[in-house]
Image 1 (cartoon, rainbow, N blue to C red):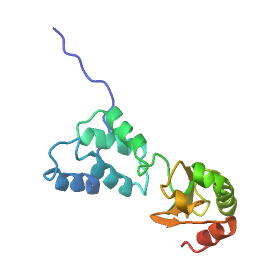
Image 2 (image 1 turned 120 degrees about the vertical axis):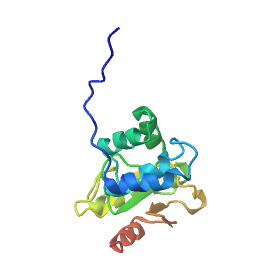
Image 3 (image 1 turned 135 degrees about the horizontal axis):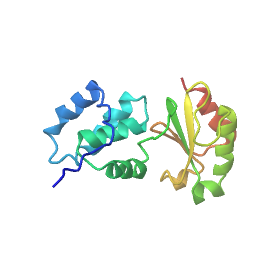
Image 4 (image 1 turned 90 degrees about the vertical axis):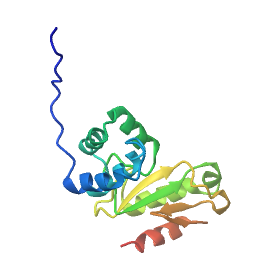
Length: 167
């Protein structure tokens, strides 16, 4: 009986700092699957705020998980990114409450101010912009979130002023 050989090319290992961080946390988690979210955070930080395919496959390999499982987690959670992001992440609420009170105009003003399309990074690398389904603050519509800060009751002018104040 002949042996079946794996002919896939070997993946480059994760960078040492990411592997060390994962190894350090391993004793705090009951399974490799439970360690997946923090492992992805370490990898994303190493790659400057996003996860290239190399990082995703490296984490899957390091944790002995199927790449499909890791991709599933990444695509489920908004906090993981598969493309480069700016230093500041701008999310403009586009759900019904915000849309009825001018959310779409806010999104257009933000894109115009930063000279980007949705899901792009500004030329200076400062901001990335997304229309976001719901930020959970309907009573403050229209609103946006910049990094972890909520900005309620916006107008196109007030949204632009907020963006001007970012580093």
